[in-house]
Amino acid sequence: MKLILYTDGGARGNPGPAGAGGLIYDTDKKVVKKFAQFLGTATNNQAEYQALVLGLELAKKISAQGRSASGGKDTEVDCYLDSLLVVEQMNQKWKIKNKELSVLFVKVWNLTQSFKKVNFYHIPREKNEEADKLVNEVIDENTL
Image 1 (tube, rainbow, N blue to C red):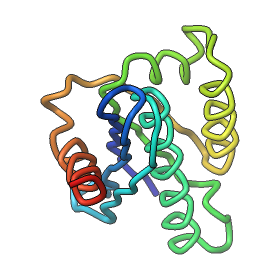
Image 2: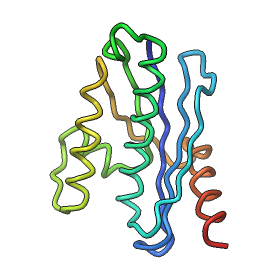
Image 3: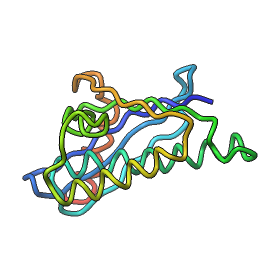
Image 4: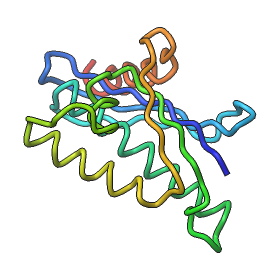
């Protein structure tokens, strides 16, 4: 099984009211799951990581439902983010200097162990509009 995950996170004020959102697709580009969560006060980078955590947790559940015998270990996940920082840190090309981000990095890293393989790809913001829209909607719902 292969899942394609697009995530985004954002904060207004940095730190400020923050949200995380994303979409999970199957290989036919059909939406399997949409998600969005208000995070309270966070930085943009924290929100980006939180979105990835939420997305991988959902991908793990979807994978386990589809392949109960293996518990998801035969699933690959391709993750697409517009946060170059998170992608480069997850690909272990950039160091993590912020304590809060290092905690979130470990959460994501531990989640990756539930899958056969997880890839992280950086995409331009305009290729991540759906996830961005979910983030802005959840922030608006909780702040307006």
